[in-house]
Length: 464
Image 1 (tube, rainbow, N blue to C red):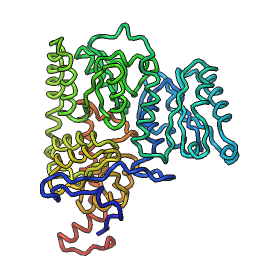
Image 2 (image 1 turned 90 degrees about the vertical axis):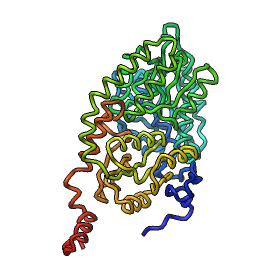
Image 3 (image 1 turned 120 degrees about the horizontal axis):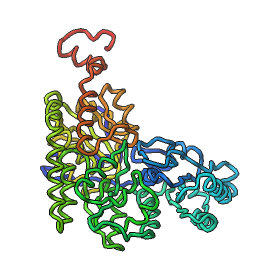
Image 4 (image 1 turned 135 degrees about the vertical axis):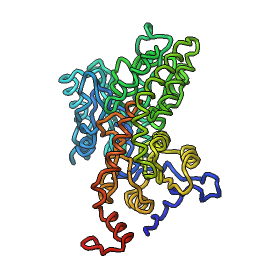
């Protein structure tokens, strides 16, 4: 057995250990400087939110390594401009650290804006910029005056907090754009979708649902978004917040300054997808036809996919999964989706959950489920072996852990190529889970061979 590292005890709980009451969990600890930790750094959080803006220039002010972390690694698609797929950097060197990188940043911005003609530019501060003290905001103001486009500094020095602080830095930058566009032709039945990043085209699926209901989507922040749509986002009547960790702060600012209420929703799984549509329909109760169209849409979509889901369920009943994702709200949806196809959740954790989120997870989970905040690879491996899970749902950093342990893997992060949101997304999810869990290759994994040998009392051979 592998013991928990010192200081981690309060960030891991087993449901049911506290006498039936949710245990108090520690969370929100700062990321470690100089390390791309499981939680990830402030810069990581900011680029997650802003990089899907397709007609903007994104430049990383720092060493080339940070820019390499952003180069075309997302599944965020665009229906038009592809500028966001590139990664630009000032590539700070030793002499820049000594004498400062402001002149280099200004020259890079002027050159890139002249060449690419973006609608706006975002400048990301990294750890080294925080140490040498470059005045990024001043550079942005000078370049904005020269070029006539918004040039926005994103104060995302990696060591100064957690991924959630990166979300805040991104939302602060976005808020400089909101409220600057024309809203005269926006429908009275209109929404913004916040925290949806168009991974594998999911934004297009959701836009179609709301269009069928008679609701206008003014902007999606930030999947397949355009600067002009962001400028007029304050004209929508309702904000629907999916990734609550990244966008709740922005929704609160828009409610405070523009009077736009917001609701937390999720678009993963049948239950949460349907609830999201009904929540919007309830808000626009002045037009009863919207609710009628929502009910018709849900009936048609569920009827089309339910028989196929039942076939997968027959094969997956009793299988166990581990979930480790960025936001806890996504974990809620994944637990419900897994139950729908017959699977149990043995381990669940997140990078950015707060105390209330972990309380909710404990209330949802079955007794004995491991709840973990900001896990490290050693812990995840230990828990997966301890619970003998059949599937790991996570992101790019968790994939090697699963495969090394001989466990099926489902990518639910930013690199995936299949949409998992909406009703068609639920079918894609079930297909991927089934294909991964039921693959015959896992019978040859050493831990499975050992178990089979022990059960049959036969020699272990080369696997001993």
